[in-house]
Length: 309
Image 1: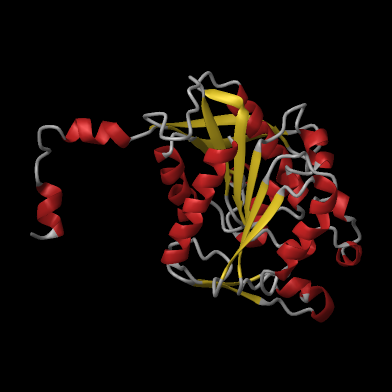
Image 2: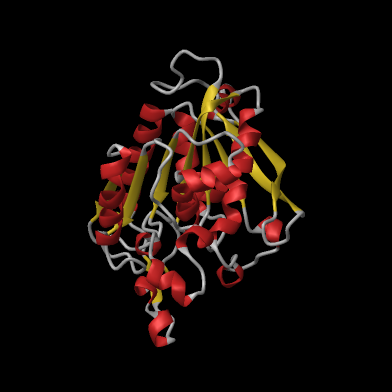
């Protein structure tokens, strides 16, 4: 039977019940967030809230209110990665909120992204405040998952400096950061070339909130040139923060291996450990989807949040 014929078939008795058994309740929401690029101004951040149809094994813990995970996109904007993880988290009984940090700022491409990660940190904490006031969500059990730029935000939210500045007394209970450009964190010499500091730029990572952090990165990541910078970053903070940071490396995986879309190549001044700031040549970044490792990394993310939320 052809695909066209399948699409034209009428719905069968029981289809509605089958759909309802797994379909989350989806709503499109918005909330205010401070615009640090224009002091005193406010952005309206829009997002997709997905509430699971059931508590899910291992995620509900017998509570009426559900845990939740905030999902943060990369420099290219919202793409297939958010929905990929959202589906599995919802199936485990964990609510999700995907937000669009670019739409509120009128950004249409990666080249227009904000000049520093710290400028988007208020979005994450404003989303946390929004989730905390939802009657369906347990505000004390909210995690954050980010990809690339979103991974930077996820890591930054685990630093006491930024949680104290933007959190309003709230912090996330667990953090997952996928390929968050680890070499840039605490990199004072690099930031001096940009006439700023790690703290001001948003990449200070010294005194953590105490929430567990899982970093996932590919061994062929073109920003860090492998997993070593992420492993070194974790080692540098674990001794004084109770060993709460773990790193998983995926052999042969590129940046964005879990972006199950056609491969792409981009250029970015922050790739190749920031070589652009020495050479003036923007390095390329390969995004090669790896379905097998994408599903493996998704399973690890769900297990991590089910354990810690």
